[in-house]
Image (cartoon, rainbow, N blue to C red; front, side):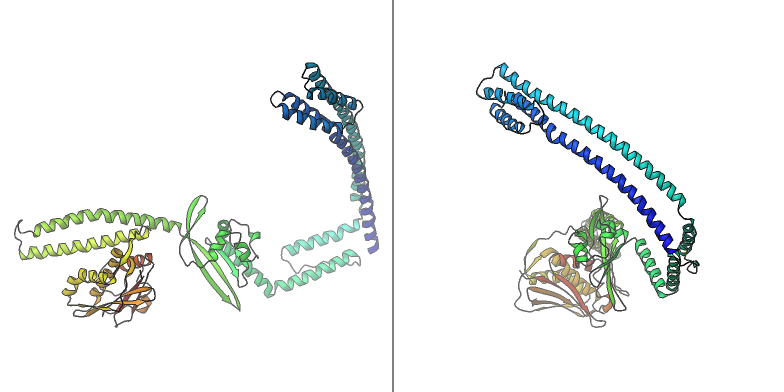
Amino acid sequence: MANSVKNRIRLGTLFLFSLVLLSCGVGIYHLVRLKNDAREILKDNYESLDYGHEMQSALDSFTFQPDNSISRFESVLKLQEVNITEPGEKEATRTIRGYFNLFRQGDRSQRVTQGIRTGIQEVLALNMSAIEYKNRRANSTADKALTYITLLAAIVFLVGFTFSFNFPSVLTGPISSLTEGIQEIGKKNYHHRIHLERKDEFGQMADAFNDMADRLEYFENSNLNKIIFEKTRAEAVINSLKEASIGIDKNGVILFANGQALQLLGIQSRDIIGKPVDEISRKNDLLRFLLEEKGAVPFKIVVDNRENYFTKEVMDITQDNFSSKVIVLRNITSFKELDVAKTNFIATISHELKTPIASSDLSLKLLEDQRVGNLTTDQKELLQNIKQDNQRMLRILSELLNMSQVEAGKIQLEITHVKPQTLVDNAINACASAAREKGITILKSYEEPIKDVSADAEKTGWVLNNFLSNAIKHSPEGGDITIRLIVETGKMQFSVVDQGPGVPSQYSSKIFERFFKVPGSKAGGTGLGLAISKEFIEAQGGQIWVNSEIGSGSNFCFSLPIA
């Protein structure tokens, strides 16, 4: 039985294969004949036609370019003389040569010119006639080929049609059983089995199918299925993330990249998954940028002709001795736009409010003038309170304007050689009144030799004033504040040491953030002074920090490069 099925399939296949080979042979034979006919036309006659037209063009352009036309005509005529293929073409070519020799020798008569043109026309006519003849012959060959191929196609169709209906019916039963089994497996019914009491090929197929079903049932109930399920679910979660995410294993191979990441990178999934990240980064500027250690600084990517802002976050994942990292890009465009709008709003409002406050300050000064009239003690006290409130509002507005400049990236620096002692003296003079009110003594401690720094005097002085005024606010009455100048390698350190309550260690890194205030602090202010100070110092190439412990006071420091 096994041999019967195998032999029938083999003989039927060989018979159909023979018919196909016969059809192909006939078709190839006639195609070769057609190719040869077409080659003869293209090789011989079309070249002669091209030479004839080229000689006509050279003859027509003689009036404008005589030297170039004669050389062109001569070169084309030589090509025509070695491409003579048709009866009578040789004589016509000789005629052209004879008249052209006269023409080249200076005979420009109409007889010579007309003789050349007549010879060219004769060559063209001979080759056109040959082309028409060969074309008719090629058409005849094509018609015969069509007839033979059509006849063979009909025979093959009839034989194949008959073969398909007369194929042994013994094949249909096992195939139907196998189809049903595959459909059940597709429905995850791994308990389904095919039972065929046969010893032929289909019996072997049924046994193989049952073995496959046994293994699938085993895997369905094993941990592998759970792993595959978790992997599929993880991929679905990754692809559903709104943030662009790229996973890289410890060997630098890209594990995954969701749709958002692929869109930003401008690359297909098949071109990145499973590939070394170094290889891909050499061809992709954005990926190379993401691999660099840039911290969390926002950066810009143009998406659909629109500027989008992103921050990068790198998460290291280690589990079961397997380490990898995930690069996540968060789109902060909307926050950036709101931040810009907020900055512009604050700058506008601060600028507009300074005018009426300055005007009211001027009015207060006029009221204090005795020429206007004497004030009672209560009126003077009220006037002084209003004046202090005005000064506080002006200081807040000044901080807001400075902060808006920082946020807009419009810090304008005038870097010069500045003496640190001058900055310290100016800061002490500016805060002397506030220190006297609390009975605070401001001390100076210099480490020689003091060297000039490369800095913006106005903005550095503002930072030192801010440090000193904060120290006065938080120091107890009758306390001491020390301003120190310390020479370091290539830079000068400024520090303001107070005897205040100190800053908890968990807030040391946050105290320079915008609008941050230490919880429980009773001092007023906007929480912008230290943030502005940080931006001013870092813009000058310096560093800023605080050393503090609860109950031991604070030491606010910054350093600037030595000039």
